[in-house]
Image (cartoon, rainbow over all chains, first blue to last red; front, side):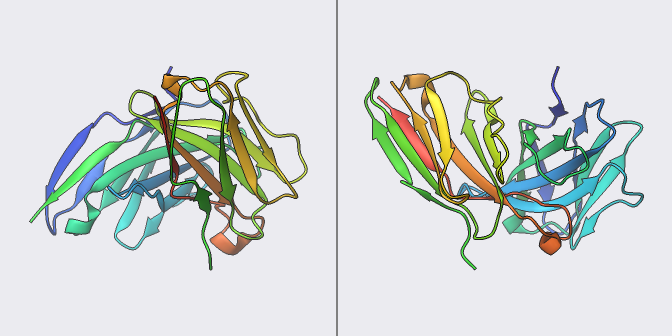
Length: 118
Length: 118
């Protein structure tokens, strides 16, 4: 079974509008972390935002926010006021079984290609 | 400061040859990870080093793959008797030991080594 599922292979958004990229996850570990990374065409992986399983509030980082719905096991990324530079591949990832530490391998979803139109 | 560096950036090799890929993590980071990214398989975890602990080798696809980390810093991923299915981008990442990144210990990725097996 897929641990991280991103159901949107591609998304399109108009510049300055908001967009939501979907991510659902599957784990039986009560302690886990959820990450979003951006990969532009240059290939570098850029960390965007993190949500811990025990965090009470949704994470926010500038124009990025994470809509964390624990009961539904979803961790959708919301990008507000899209910019042309946001066009990239976006990966959702999970770290589980870390035993309370902040280390451990990441399991990635298949990614969503976001295209921002002017 | 300097980020994660990897060398070579590109490697073309003939089927059956051995290759070594190098990763220099961010100075002071105690955890080092190897992933590979290919069209058919997405981003896959390979191996993970954390301090002096035994490495987590659970993602290595076969015994042709091995990795070592010398002096808690530089790591080398070795692929013996390369096969065409080994063609991929090999990504290295490192993460820190303190709360300098807000306690999330996100992984910082290098630019990757693109391996092509002909």
